[in-house]
Image 1: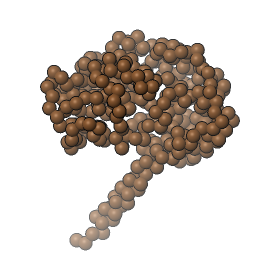
Image 2: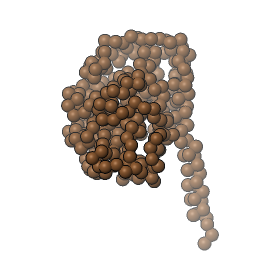
Image 3: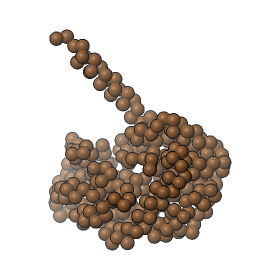
Image 4: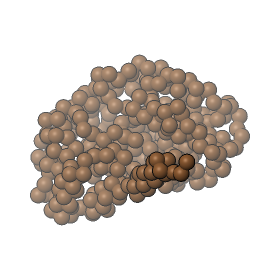
Length: 334
């Protein structure tokens, strides 16, 4: 699979001053806010979900709803963080309130037993569900984030196709955009997506047993009642992502697949997603398209350009600095 590997928080509005960042042994940042609260009042909250399912926005929304001293553990150990028992024992032993956000990559190697056991250390456990059709589109665009280091030639091909799609959406299917860019071909895409959602369907009874399922679509529709109930907080107030997480936000909406997909896409993705859609509480029979005459570039080609150039200047400066240091140490006077 050539899908994007998914990747420090700053102070959320209305909370106390942040101390110097702390880091896990793997380099993932943990934020601290300086306000006292009793241990009994300090909630421990775990958020789990697929990449591009809205977990980042929900993590900061929940984090902002907590007053007092608090810790945000953002994707600890990145790919295997949900399964890392030692990390979860340590972070839930803290006196501060804790919000931990982990990504799940459902394969036959995923240790679900460890995930459920680790989740039991938290008072509140949330699975963030999102329509897989929107996840698919979001995953494609985020694939081109600079830190993912996707090849320049594939980026240019993908960018050109997206520009064509923007101007005449009906002329190009989403499948035609991603084949040969995000994945090598349509067969590889089907194998990847089919496998992921087959695994999730098999696990969903256990997910519902151990976690509270919250749908991303409810949150972007300003309905936080499910998230409030799952976390024991009032999460409906306005919040903002810190500057270094702004790149993850693209449309802040749902149902965009209806104008990105064509009939060819419906034929391709329907057998891959329908079972999971039904199991996760969506209408598996609703594949109604809402074609547009054009698609705004700000959510498409402009977004690709923005995240492609993110950190590029910093990397150039870093390389120049390293080269200068190497030259100095090689030729400095003795």
